[in-house]
Amino acid sequence: MKKRTQSSARNLSKVFLTTLFLIYTSMHAKAQDGLAGIEEADRQVRSYFAAGTSLMYAIGAILGLIGAVKVYQKWNAGDPDTGKVAAAWFGSCVFLVVVATVIQSFFGV
Image 1: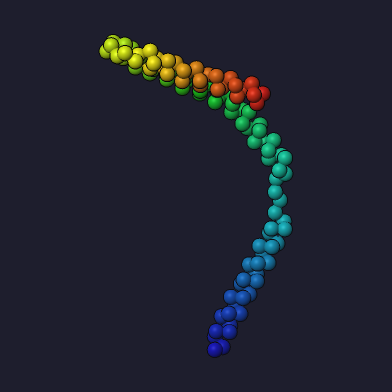
Image 2: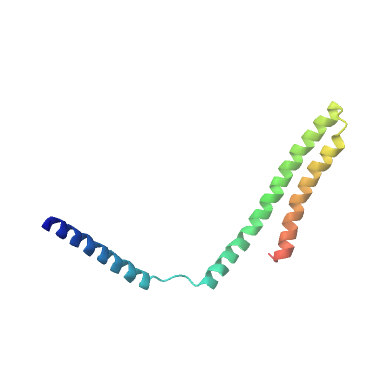
């Protein structure tokens, strides 16, 4: 019975010391100001926008080349829906360019 009491007293003292340590560290922890964090995130997103726009233009160029090859293959095969496929591929490339421009204008990046 005596061993059990000593063991539970040790466990209680460990819990108490751990609790005190956590309270002490939480009181002295310093957090970043919320406004400063938002401004930093805004600055970082704006700095990545030019690279993202270039990436969208590159993806649009690759999709345009793939679309041109697919339309050429359909045209040579004599498929009747060649015009529909060409319009779809052209529309997807235009969409990528327009999205980059609209985002840039809308958010003032």
